[in-house]
Length: 439
Image 1 (cartoon, rainbow, N blue to C red):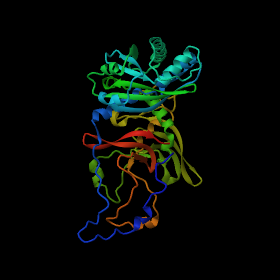
Image 2: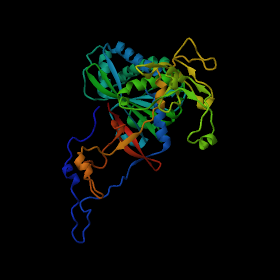
Image 3: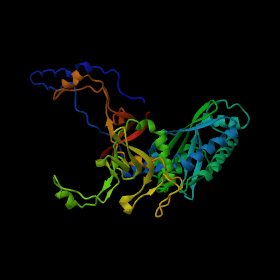
Image 4: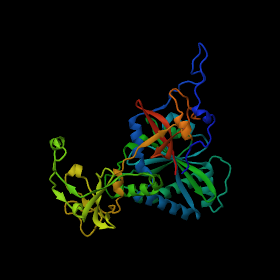
């Protein structure tokens, strides 16, 4: 992983040096001033939640991933060349700010997410559009000047988009809107008129490669459309997405440490019982599945972290003079809500009668990752220091962080930098908007 720490920091060797004595009538703080964050972009909590909901419009696992693969395969058939589509960034902007992103000439296709009446649009970079048209008509896909497309060329682009939409439709997840092409916007002004009455627009930018030609595709989705999406509830699709995200971000989790707890007994007590417990008291057990006092094994529930999502059914054995747990089935459940034993998903031959195994349920314990507590730390700066400099720190000392206002901050998990972001204000509270992921 690339860490954005400074390898050299001007002025750092003087970290342990005492502050210069102030001259008579002057401030000891001359030469530096306290910095206060100001002019941060202000977001509402509704906007923050909107970006979370947008996740279900992005290609991921399950049906969405199948849709992406189907589109790439269909475009490869059309152009007889490899086509790559990669998510670049996602931003939330007001229609007024879109003028900074859009400029004529460009190609804009009007999209309507059925059954909604609200319209958005898609922008395809002219270089990429000309290459696609040339490829489809039998050329080599050479780049040409970024001139406006002719009516015939716009018709060719509409055909390409229609083929992509037709391929995508049957592979989309339930609850996601189906896009319908309604023609082309002749100018940026015409496209902006489609957003009348919208407060926010989600801009999704994709990097695209067609053969040797690189370009971009941008989707401008009205916030009202994103708000109408219906994310799937807990089930096979959500678990498939969770496992997909875990696999994709596994490098960021490798340094995470948590507890494994092997439970071999249970007792029902109330709050008053706990308050009265004292040294020498005896707690009567309702269940005991192993006898470590007699050097005997048995069974145990091995829980990860908080252990609320489920556990591993494990066999306790004595090997090499110590106890070892042989992990078995994964048991998932929701004891807090249902007050009953969760159902096992690790053994298909013995499903629980009250909660049968769902199709696609994880048997590898991926759902248990929700029980691992993590802390995200926002780092303004990370500078190298020696032990001597640390012990020489003094109250009132000034440390040069070698950062200027406006630079991105880093987000770290267990000391490992995983992302870069920018500070924003969310209804009076500070937040960090992710700009890029690292690792």
